[in-house]
Length: 415
Ligand code: SAH
Ligand code: SF4
Image (cartoon, rainbow, N blue to C red; front, side, top):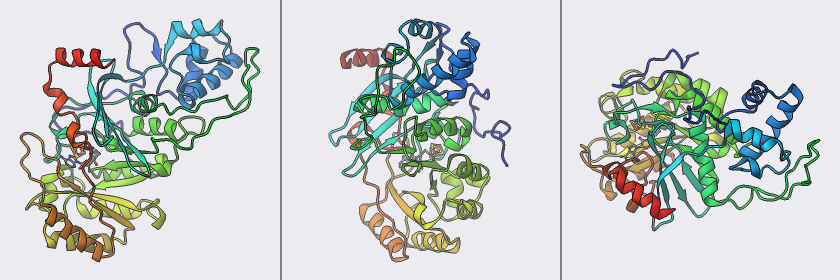
C-alpha cells in the first residue's frame, strides 16, 4: 500500500512536505475549519477544559461549524455566553479569503481565493437544470505538467490543507445561502440550550454535487483531500452523499485502491489518449503509470459496478487524439478491461501560449458517435462560463494577469 508521506512528487517544485493540518495565523489563534471532532476535542482539552466539557463542547462546535455553517462563535446559541469569549480568544472559524468573485451570464460562478499565507487558487460553481456542481481545488498549481493544462504550467505548488479544501464548499454554501435553517436537532445538557426539534431540511439545494476537478492532482494530496471529504460526507457535517462526489485523477495508480477504501467516492480518470506516445506527451505521468496499468487499476476499483461507473475524461485536441481510429481504440480498450465506463468528451479550452487547438465540433460529434455505437455513453461536455474563463481544469488565468492593486480595488467595490 502506498504511503503518501514517502511518495516522491515529480515536477520542478515539490509541495510543502510537512503534513500541516492548520495554516498558522499571525494572531496565534487556531482555525478550526478542516479539523475533525477528535482534534477539536483534543485542542479544547489542551486549552484547559476538563474531559467532560471538552467532549460536550467539541460535539456542539463541530455541529455548528460543519452542519450549520456558523461563521462565529456568538452564533452558537446553545453554548453558554460565558464560554464564547473563551473560544474567541483561542480559535477562529476560517474561510478562504475571496480575492475576486465573478458571475457568468449563464449562471456559472467563479471565485479566486487565497490562503492565509498568500497563495491563490480557484473554485467554480456550475448550475444545471437538475443539479449544481462545485468544482473544488486540491492544490495550488500542479506538479504533473500535462501539456494541455494551464494549471500544470504554474511554478508554485503547495498542497491545500483540509480546511482550505472543505472551506471551498463552505464558502459556496455561504454564497448560495444554503446552510440548514431552523432548530438544532439534538438536545445538550446545557442550561442555555433553548432550541429543540429539528426543522431544517437539505432538500431543494442548488449545490448538490462536488467534483475534485479544480486545480491540482487530488491523489498527490491524498490525506488532506480524504480528511476534507470526510467532513463533507459526514451526516453531522456537511452531509453530502458520497454518490454526489467525484474525484478526478490523471492516473496516480498506487493511490487508487486507497481512494476507494478510504474515501469511496466516484472516480473520474483523465485518460485523454489511447496510445503510449500520445499519452506520454499529454499526461507525462503516463511514463510512470502506463495506460494498461491504469485501466487495470480502474477495473480493480471496487466501486466500478454498473451502478457506479468510472468516468473517463477525454480532452478533444485537433489532430492529436481525435481520429476515428482513436475512438475505436478507446472502445476496444474499455471493453477489453470490461469497464463499466462513461466517457466525457471535453472540448479543449485554449489558453495563451497553449500548443494545441480544440477539435472541430464535427470531429467531436463523429468521435462521440463511434464511442456511442460501441455501446459506451460519450456525451460532450458543454463549455460553461466561457465569459469568465470558468471551465474546470482551466483555472487561474485572467486573474493572474491583473495587478494586485487592481484586484484590491475590484474586491473593495464588490463588497
Ligand atoms: N488533476 C486532476 C484533476 C484536475 S483537472 C486530473 O487531471 O484529472 C480536471 C480536468 O480538466 C481533467 O480531466 C483535465 O485533464 C481537464 N483539463 C485541464 N486543462 C484543460 C483544458 N485546457 N481544456 C479542457 N480540459 C482541461
Ligand atoms: Fe495537473 Fe490535472 Fe492539470 Fe494534469 S490536468 S497538470 S494532473 S491539474
